[in-house]
Image (cartoon, rainbow, N blue to C red):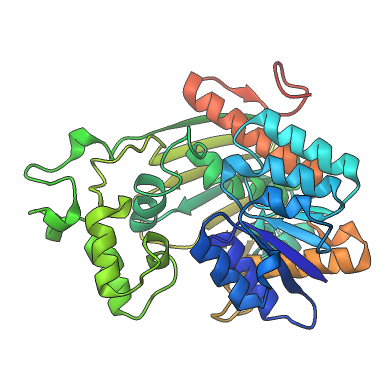
Length: 420
């Protein structure tokens, strides 16, 4: 089957890498991207001719239908327009999360693709990980009995948070989206998937506490390259980006800060660009730590913690049931059986270290499932349909309202004032 890629940034390029690795199943035949370098590079990698490499999604949409499906991987605020238009043009759709930075935008997009009758998958890639499949099989098999409560941690990582959510594209809620939607929409959706029941109520606490001007160390400069205290700073940009470059790492996040991934190019980007700014002197406003309490239909509960102040690790989860409990870290799952006293450890199958490994195999799993769904016309291969995807988005918006107002918020289209 054939794909058009709308947005040739990190996410669009990652999906393109999987497609390139499976030429017997899929190929990229068109690209839309306003940045010339990224557009031409993705087109070159996939052999897309210049007449099918568009400078905007509008140009792609104005052309005759060029592919079976489109991947919409633009910035958060620019998903609704291309998704609705391309669905109306008959393209099956994969849309990067979040669907939109507003509840109304999410609902509009879901209604439109449902009305268009095209196959539709939100890129909630955590659902498609081999790790998730293992956890889900154990829970659905009754190995812990009825799920009563869950503790789930997203350790964003100190340098990743600084890169993406202090210096980077997702640092402000007015130009991207709030932190829980931008980063942890994956996790709220994952909890919905694992527990297998709708989220009914949420509360939340969190704030931007550390990455603020008043926390800037004495004697610090506003740019790392001219800062006297940079060698002792946990968030040193030269240490991060030049350190990775000297290890031979020229992909993400180094290639985000500059197209010239040489030492001179990276140094210039740190001197002049946004990624060389002091983390205490940026224009960021999204939270650096947040907790969410969730109540599901039937009474099960969960807590979710997102924090910047960790190493860059995989998620950690503990699930507590009436017959047993489960501990998982993305690589292994340990099951404690209360009846037999047995402790069993399950290893997650390896997904390698290539394009199949991003998001723990979740990107590959999503593309495999979506490609199969389009090829067969069977939406059952997609693990979250439009209604459930909208539901998990609404839970995220409710949690942010709860954080801002200090309230317990209902979730769903029937909640007071919610989208109908």
